[in-house]
Length: 361
Image (cartoon, rainbow, N blue to C red; front, side, top):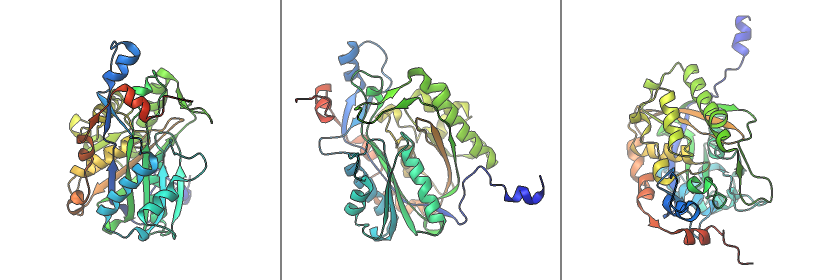
């Protein structure tokens, strides 16, 4: 291959022509908590293992729309921009409240970003939020917009008695992407690794998703998360020790901890972004919630690796460097730990009512 052909061949990493980064971010988690012991009590008589301690449950007046609005308002508070400066509102979720009616337009209206704004809903199981974030990076990086908002948000989905009922929780995070000069964290590169691996699915008109049990581990989660992380680190010439923080998709406690060790990361590097043992799995948002928790505590110069996972299957990897602006933005909105700390415990009967699992007609 000639030097000219090498120059024209695109690399594997996704990069923008100009520096762009996160100018504002915000998280949201419902206050209601269902202990894993309650699920076990109902379905196994209290016998068997419990993969997490508790999970978040949305209230009767909460869904992807309302939670996205809360997270977006927190992101706006930190970005210190007018809502009308945002030229795109993209919401990634696998539990949009309407089959036909966008979540994004409602969110855009509620935060005051309309009418001169592009709006769209994104879907890719648990990584819908990270792919929306990648798109905002490209949108701003191309010069088509000064600011774009991406959100990863979901509500709990899990068939009664299924393993997912322990870990499928609710919540997510929002990120406003803008010019690198005004960003609290600037992106170095992103990368996506995707295959057709049907480990988790839900057909139209079905209420609950299905999954391939143990098949969701090695050929699905680990294959994609490992590949995405290894490629982006290799192509950036980086090693695990070059990062201060790392966060992965968190379907349970064991998977992200295990993949971190397999990649050579220490517990100190990934503990800030590990939320699975406290709030459970948050579809389309757990890696992004981990990122919001990291940004809450990050310092200028910190380097961060984020790797999402979405069933079906694929992983997005993002690398960013924290700037001096971080210190002045962290306390302008509630931190992720605030939402984790505020909690109201509920029993299984209340959970059944809140999630509409009890049909009365």
